[in-house]
Image (tube, rainbow, N blue to C red; front, side):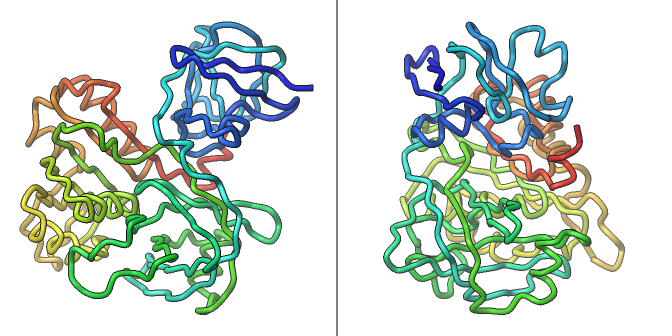
Length: 353
């Protein structure tokens, strides 16, 4: 049995098999619904149910509160339809543009960029044309079926690198992995993993990517390894000659956590329209840091009190993304629909209900 889902105001429809989620069926159908974690943790897929009935699987209360459910809001990533349904959701042009593929990938290099960050490069099969938008992510499929998500950190067009050096070969992707002690995947990456190891991945996923049709100036806002998809967007800007003014804010705790600081400095030097502002929340005397300090989104607010004509692309820890969305919209006049985000939810985040 299948149920029909109609999405308004776009007027698109697709079928959902019984016991499947609305989002999973939309992804298979190439329908660009907004989403992030796919696990009921981030709230990015929140939509309004106009007609029909759904049952929700496990999700975090902060992603969808009981009050929001009473108002007719649902999370498409964990909502299973019980009848035909009509949704009100803004569709994302291009989100379903590229096919989702499963494939083996070979670890080509593992580079320790910081004590707890590895830059991994994967070589994809030569016979697979893997396409994605800068900002999207892939999932590793582990031996027990568990999945771990990481954003591509290089642009899909294999651009000339902003910081010099050799660009990655065609058919390769770069990922930034932070070690979470006790995590079965990152423990292996930081411990026993060797170059040439074969992993299984699936993607691309996600509705976080640059809206190239806009000419608005933009804030690229990252915390920690949330820098990865922002780096891909910067590379895309260079490859396509995008001249929109952009300000890159990267928030970390200490100087050592700015694991590609030199790359960002050189990227800003190579792109006249790009300004780079690193911000440390726990700068230590031994760092000799003379730059900005505090919370990274507050640095944005101090510099840009009026964001009414801007777009913001935010990626990183959920607390940063949530604070930025709340404060930039409420206090800096950022249009709510011009805040695009990807919250890096951990496995603990995803399974806290």
